[in-house]
Image (cartoon, rainbow, N blue to C red; front, side):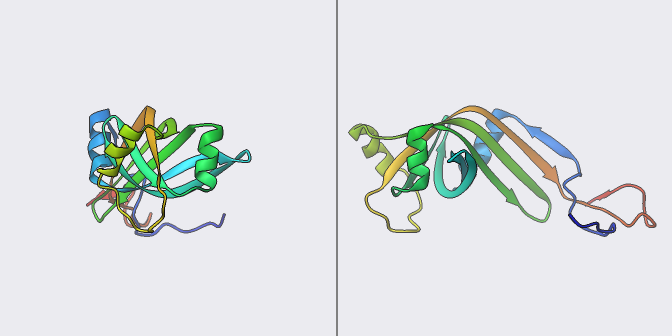
Length: 156
């Protein structure tokens, strides 16, 4: 890691708000792109996924491949969604259990979910994530000033 001098920048050290579970779900339901973390050969791997959130579950679909292979070996996962704009940033992280959907009735329901179809892959395999823990934080955008200008961050 390299050293850097203080300068005006977005600071993740600004005010932090711990979010309630209902606030976490509201944020999850407002987005559709997240990151799925699984263990592949004993090493953590992160996969981007388009998803649909409907409390109490997350639904995504994928083609056969590494992430689905790992889900069949051990279904404990982490899932993360975040967003950032000029005034704030937020992040929701959940740990949970992921399982392939194989029941025809559940597949029929999943087929009606508003999942984005970025890459036309057939056949789809649906996966449902059921969280065991969920945690979220919201960060207010702060600007760090040079030490010579001020001793504390200014909140914009």
